[in-house]
Image (cartoon, rainbow, N blue to C red; front, side, top):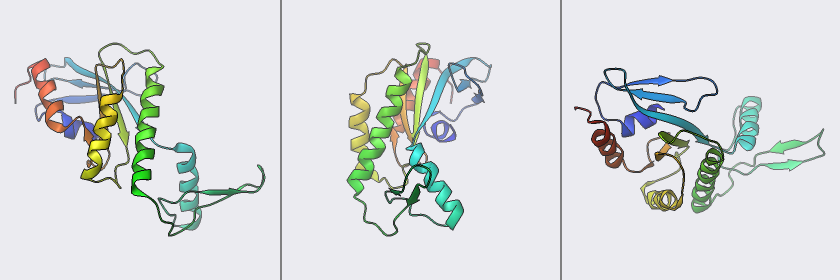
Length: 180
């Protein structure tokens, strides 16, 4: 949420109220009078099943290759998982996987009912992304149809922000006439 606010919310007296639980929004942006500016639904694009095992291996051995593909072996009860070290990984393949995770998150959120004024923020790990990848994320952004008022892709490292920072801030200012 902090990455979204830093990237897209103008520097004014705005408060963010986070909601825990099962509501239609995860956060609300409030203006200086306490009026709701934006209702936000937040999700994070990650391959949680594999990442869960990656974190287990990190805890067990003290290190794990962040990019390697896991190798499963053994039967269900005696299953072992190994993360090879020093494996070459194709950058384009990594970007494609992240984009697919983002698409999957948006599709999952579209299957639920939300109010028409809810903004969807999809967070993701952009630690391996560079400025050359931004075009791929923009193409994906433009190709997604969704019922949300607005949609944002926010890399937690701040390397990838879609739509771009100026678009988001300008839209907030025009709609709610926030004074800078």
